[in-house]
Amino acid sequence: MKDIDLEFLEPFFQLHPAVLLYLALGVLTLAVAGGAHLWQHRHDRRDPESLASLMEDLYPERKKLWYRIRARLLAPVLTVIAMVLFWPAAWWMRCAELLNERRLAREREEAIFKVKPHHLLERMTTDEIEAREMVQDPLSAVPQLPFGHLNVVWSQVKSAMLPGDELWSFTATWPGEFGIPELRKGYVLWRRGKPVGHVLTMCKELELVLPELPPARQADVPGGRRTDLAVDEIEIPAFLRKQAD
Image (cartoon, rainbow, N blue to C red; front, top):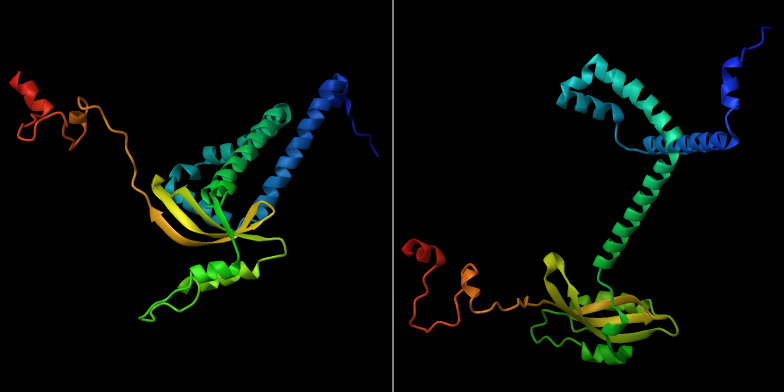
């Protein structure tokens, strides 16, 4: 059996050990990235063939031979070379992506209303809360139960109580949707310094309080009127004053 000639690998083994270690880490990074890509491709519910045919219909240049050579041969080869040679950049980009995902998750979590310690008003018992929130409707449109139609939510909060839990009334001003602040009131189940569940009894939008402009600038506000004019004095718009001048 003829021996395999490996002379072409001799320059590679003559490299500095640090360079060999760097390239080995690059190959390891390539293997990890390739495995993650294959795993994601396998668990992707979308049909890649249908997506490819759709893209070819939208962009006919994708059917050309040169485009297929670039997409299926040159791009993968250049990606492998770049991954092995510049693998620290790949890890840096991945870490930046994970940090961005964590930041977005934290922002989504903060957008969900939660009762905070400074929102608490008064510690109460279940009997005190039910006596306060008992509905008395002479028309019987609302069931005569604590919290009326929200009695199911209140029952879930009570069923979640454990020894040592506390019930508090709360009031909070919360930035609602579209930046309109809301006044929220209700009762919260408190456990070891954290909210477990709550029942809202009020959710009311508050009017935005805009800063007042100086009298000299109120004329520049669309639809605004200066307050330094007499009641019977007519204010001339700015564009008419320019034409008159």
